Image 1 (spheres, rainbow, N blue to C red):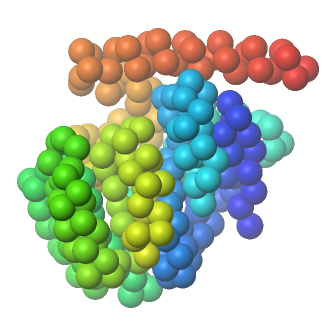
Image 2: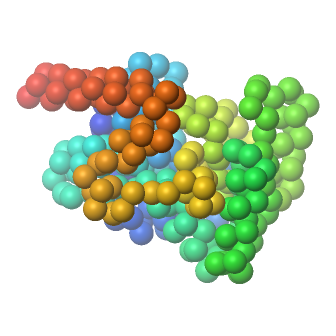
Length: 248
């Protein structure tokens, strides 16, 4: 049974990785229009700054400890070791288990090329997996007609799991806004689409355990990510230290 701990006032679920996988697949099977957020440092700092985004996380069915610091703090507060439950690890694990259980999936976000690479790999490695469809929305606000068309296509495919990759915080806000419209468990997995498609490499496990993935991504995209990682990470450490001293 998963429990929760607050990290920067956001509810982070804690427990074994396989329980996260099982819980998510159960949410999908229930078709109750649920959504799952994978929280890293950037997401929690954004939520701390933005009350409306904080509400999105608070109302999620599940918020996983995606980042190493988030997992460590949640585990420390619970008195037990907590492993990361990252979107990059959840995506392949959920696809494999969905194939075993006969559950269907749908992919929403990024580009047609990325989506095709995802489908090609999934069909090659998991021939039993039911893929309901894919959609690469334009990189701009959708018109009401486009929005309705996308919702109709997703619901016609009737997936158990809807993987969403629109970037943070857009994908989380999108899932919250569409709760009740999509009868599936929606998961914001962002960068996981690129890694599963084989278009971006992950660091070795030892480097991930040292929390170095942020440095690797910063090296890949310095102009886009320098502010997020250098300033946001520093902000997170400051906020956590202040919160810990205040509570202590």
